[in-house]
Image 1 (cartoon, rainbow, N blue to C red):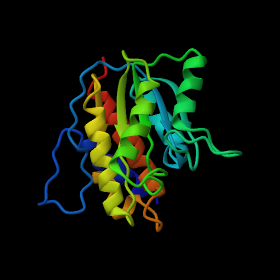
Image 2: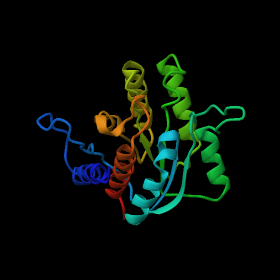
Image 3: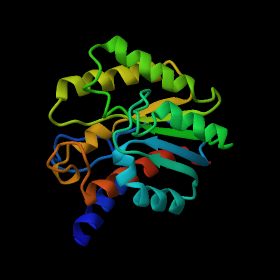
Image 4: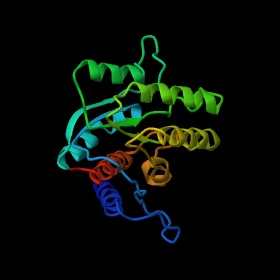
Length: 216
């Protein structure tokens, strides 16, 4: 298992400046991303993927020199829906971070997995994505990590396309193409959503390498 983790880490890290290539099937390649602002401090809000990869995220981000203000991942978290007796929404998590005095350069948002099958139209997705973005200060950069649900490819594509369109209207903000990496079989478990141990490493490495492109 250690060998698998090391190989995945190296594959993702070494690919941070490369583009995807059909000539290299199975290779984990970090999609190219243009980041418009310098990043020193980070808050990350996510669901069970973030929660499961939190140790790897904390380690990778700190090792890269980022100030990790908070990593807040909760299983079953949705973008705007607070669940009675369950996880707070992404919006509520952002509001709590702001109330606690956090003011990071970048907000990494890894949400949408638990909303893909609960919304029926593009308009539904637009509303919840815009509500979350409105909760983040205008002068902060947003990196939204898109979603991968193997068994719901159509709905996943609709959400990812919509989040790209909405985020494009916000200055200093981008969508990171995690779905391109997650298609690698070694990274995702049998349910087609949650990450393996190797996937946790790849997820943390990819987020860190992407942010490092704009580290001051």
